[in-house]
Length: 584
Image (tube, rainbow, N blue to C red; front, side, top):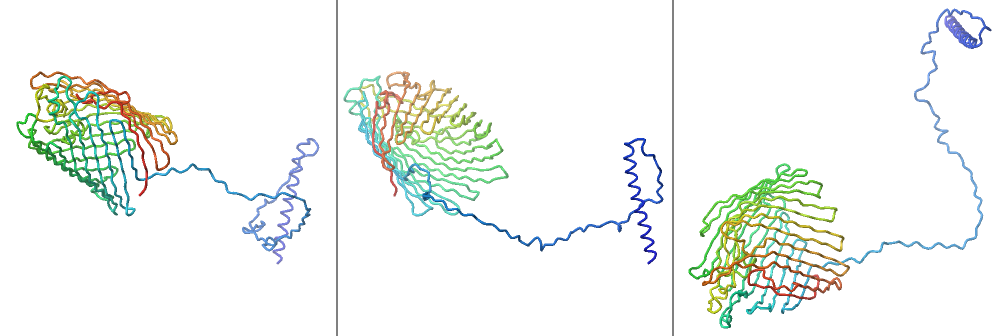
């Protein structure tokens, strides 16, 4: 007990000495500023202060707070001095505001139209389709267009009739969708183009049976798989025949198999093509003309996709079996294409080297030139290569363009050439196509330098303007000219829409074309068909959602130009009609 008191007493002495030391230090410091007033003294510290942890005042890490005082709510006392104010204001009830919307334009799935024009020209069109569920659709398209003829200077019947009926049915299943088609097409026209170089007497003209018609009956189908290595397939079967007992049977089957490897895609197309054509006689009636082709094709392709680059590496392989003089052969063609995005979706450069086997047929020739004679030599055309390069894209968001240059090399390219006339204007002919008023098909090896371009300008939503051109320079192996092929072709299009009115304009241009005319008793003479412009205008006025009236003005320059030698076209043509839209 005593020792504790002594220890405390000594500790208090130490604190006292420290306190005195601090006071003296302050006095000494202050005396330095006031010089010569206080003398310097020495203080001896017997023992330095050594504090311990127990001597310090400790602060709790988690201080205690009296939560009772915090949670106690203070009483708030307030008063309101209410002063009544007289008012006659009555607020109006709020009304919801809506934006004014333009009447929604209604679209119909079906339509029917009828028109009539000069040259005794009726036209009828009908498209209708329906469905029994959300997974199928069926319908058809019907078209009838005819003309009574009446071209200036033509002495034979120049009327024509076109009739088309196409039917379809498609259905979507869980893993695929398919479509079936069938149809019947008929074209009736005449070999009315007698050569101007001959003077035909009335007896010869009356003896010419110029009428001809072509019929086609076809069936087809397509299938597309959603998740399968077999991507798609198609099939077509057709029978084509004419008034002269010429006939053609055609079958085509193809399928595409594709599968991805990483970012790339490999796909292969396989095809089988069969064609059998028979003509009762050749042009000079020395024998009949029969031909059969059986082409097996394989087209493997490897597609490489990068950020701005797309490359397709492939080939086209065919084995063609035929009983014609061309003989059975194996063909290999390149199929290499590439495109590069110079700028994001607005400027694309592209190039390629491709080739293909083109199977010519009687039907294809009639579609190009309906005035061919039923005495054609059918051959296949081998496009050995087509090397091309170009650039396409979009400028200022409203100008679309595409410019392309190519070099094409073809073996046995078909050319239309006038048949030799079997009459000089005084001798009767047995067939209606033997008076220099029909065309044959000849073949030659042709190299072509081609430059083409396309430009479309959308000035605004109402007005659009565009056009395209094509320049071709031909180099032939045996023929002196590319018969009936123009060097320059061009088209200009314009369309303007104003509320319920829609106006359109079309201008077609073709440069001069060459041909040869001869008879069995005269030497061949070179014929030049002059260049021509064909200007067409059309207009449509929508009376309401269902009814519209239209008018077409064709060949408004009234030029009786000749697209093919001796066959002048109709002059100024006017046709007007009505269109009806409806739902089933």
